[in-house]
Length: 291
Image (tube, rainbow, N blue to C red; front, side):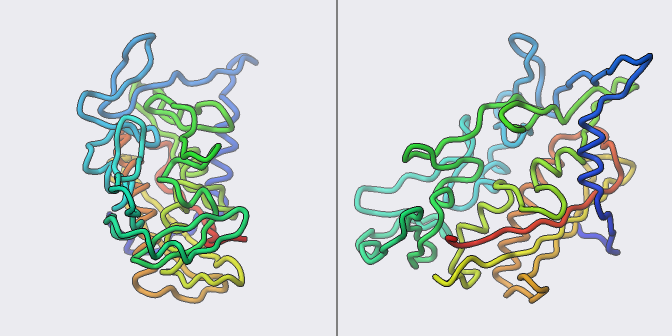
């Protein structure tokens, strides 16, 4: 993923883009909503619903190659028809979330976690984390198991219990990607909490970020993007992450945050098409550790 040569300040761009996307254009007093379109590597299937081309996996509305999907899911997971799922380990072994390897589970007997916590193995170190952090990216713990949100077709993202189209047909028949709405749903609303899709890989690394039982650690993340000629495929981004108060992160922690953001941005790039804007940015925060 490329980086900007200069820093772009787009304060409030995400919120403004999101609000404008919620209000379809009007003509003669009648509201009109642009028709949904299929993203790159997808086509119309049964019931006129977009489906990914054979050999592609669906993640965050994009149809991507399995290798890109695995990179997004992380070293301990793999991408498939149901999104991200953890790699299996033999009986009496436990998956290490950082390395993706399987380790003997005897050391985990020493982890005593709180009521709303579960143990997680990170580089052979056991930590207590919020229950959702023990699930793969794009899933959460429900009823003792990890489950994903309702399935949305390619070109759309889950939004408050329904599917929000982010790829539509432009005025010239071209495929258009509402990058403002994508940013709000995939990264988080500017100035607020980061999305689970962004923060989950970070929340799964409490030891790396120096989390202690005293409370969570806050990571501030600023993502700025440009699309030259409004070409989503040419997306370039800059990711800046600090601790609360602007304190710098350690190089390994900074790399972990950058990887979490850039693997998510690669899914946006994979949508293809024309962007509704040439630049957009967001400042969000992730909180690591049990509260």
